Image 1 (cartoon, helix red, strand yellow):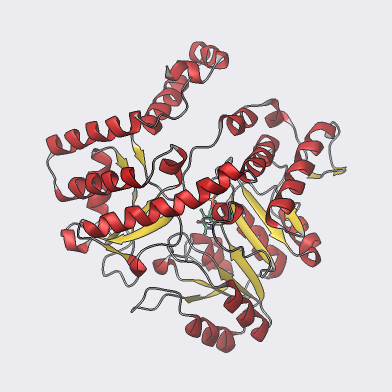
Image 2: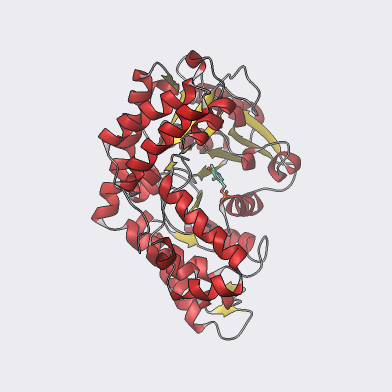
Length: 420
Ligand SMILES: *Cc1c(COP(=O)(O)O)cnc(C)c1O
């Protein structure tokens, strides 16, 4: 059945390169048979996959629609123009650049558009949920910029806006970044805007994780407040792997120049077409219901894990992901991640705020509901998943993990994805 999902081209591939064909097939089965709880992953539509596997991949299109450095761009120009228009419509944005290859690439462009190496940028601390591109010492951001980090309060594990304001006043940053990879709560964009205005900083929102919830009108949008919003298109948004940048009209030229020629060569036009398709999908009532269900499921999963004796950081979630402090189980994040993996439950270890453990070990796990919700799972399934997670974490017995894995398989079989 899995073979036929890929269609006739897969038969060609199987003959030409059985080694890689086998990888495609076993990855499809891995996605079908395990529980996918990685908060940044999703199952994109077959329409998006069709665009990704199309001849648009062959086309070089350095530049922008109507202003290319290569001939023969008339067809891909249409795709990019449609993607830009759909992005502006969906988010009510004044400008959209749909070319960044990834979220990290989009962020490089944002730094380039608004700052120079050595400038001060205020961003969320990595151990409190920030992304590598928010100033990690091993990332360009931490090497080339003077990054000042803000974090969450120890008592409520929410962003400390007082600290953020004090740091902004003391350090006069060129730019303030809000957004994170592991922050379960909503961000108060109005407060951040006021702080940016007070110190004259550019307001940058890295919405990589939650932009899909904004697209589905399930949470408030940063677009009316921010100078610039960067994001990925493959997380909750459910599009192809890639990045995108929205901005105010006054920053349009700076953003476009920073993406090309500042940071990239030719755009990946197959991905640009996939982004256009995903944006149209996001504008449907079905997607809006999906986005709300993602949050309902995340809240149900967090509550059920609390029912299993674990603790949801910041008391729960308002988004698609929950950060779970698992110290009560006596098992660290690394071991929990491995044990869940052995049981067919794919999630990741994650530092919790003020984590006493090293980032390679951690005291927590991060769970997200974008993928399982796309499969059609609901609150009842979230309760089942929480109990499977708890059982998997609390045992190191291989036979017990194998038994849980067969229960996982029974569950995922009821919510099939990518059937022929
Ligand atoms: C995922 C993520 C990124 C990076 O996206 P890639 O496509 O992996 O480069 C950037 N910022 C945040 C906040 C993210 O969550």
